[in-house]
Image 1 (cartoon, rainbow, N blue to C red):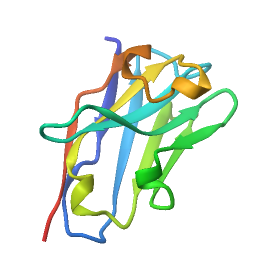
Image 2: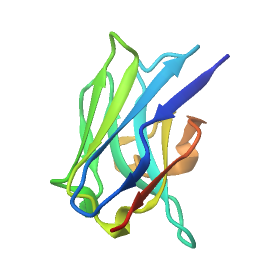
Image 3: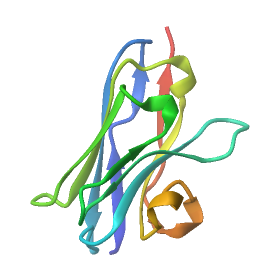
Length: 125
């Protein structure tokens, strides 16, 4: 079965950390962009971080710069999102996705063809 398997969400206090994993099953990450997106209640889906597996280029939304780190381990066909210094406004459902957007359009969700199941992150005291 072709799918992206995302895991790692949960409930965390402000200032805490979580790490997401996005593993490929039945498909490859090579030559693709893997993006992490999130959608909070009542808001549009937004791009959080992206990585080009072939070039290693990384992009981060301004709202997460300095706090979130995306990385990849192709031996495990897995992309990670390390989230530190979490804030209540980071509360959302998080998704990983595979696509081939051009660099300037890495946050455009409809350029990603495969999506993992969303995982809830709740940042609350």
